[in-house]
Length: 269
Image (cartoon, rainbow, N blue to C red; front, side, top):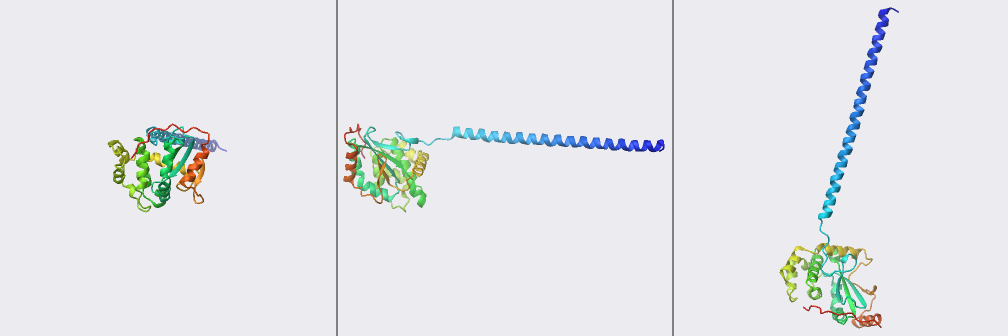
């Protein structure tokens, strides 16, 4: 082989080697770029997640918790108590201000319940529910319950509760969604219709609390209103023969040998 041919082959090999080195260098740069881009993307995603988490935390900090009415008790403060705190028996009532069956119960048992409360025999614990709003639409259950919670703030829940049932519209008529109507009804309770109460009703101050109370009802295992319990035992329903007299007797039996609770004056309507 001539020197010329040997030099030609060597030049070709060198050119091929140089070409391969260039290609390898280009591949390394490409890999580096891909890795760098991936890192940037990961950092960008992390930054977005960080912003979302931070905003969520800020939202949690700034969100308004359910404003429970004054004196609310029980788990998550969803109970409105009426009567002596130390009464020997507890009557639990789940009810909806639009519910006609609740109205029938109230019209039959309200005088008896008040008598038992006022003699220190029972404490009534009200759980406000918005079942009819969910079934028929509208917001009357919610708005009436909020107004009742506003009345609780004023120490006049029992009186306004009774006024609402005394003026309950037809189940299909969402009249309680009219806040002006609720304020007119509040005028039937002495001293209730104040600027503070009016603002509470109009602003839906306790709406979130009412929704929380309704959610608790949904988790309670009960599915209809009214649901009535005496010391935790259901005493009223489709198979119940409960009467005002039998309710009194049940309470008497449950309280046997127990001291009546300390009664404070209940604001009258």
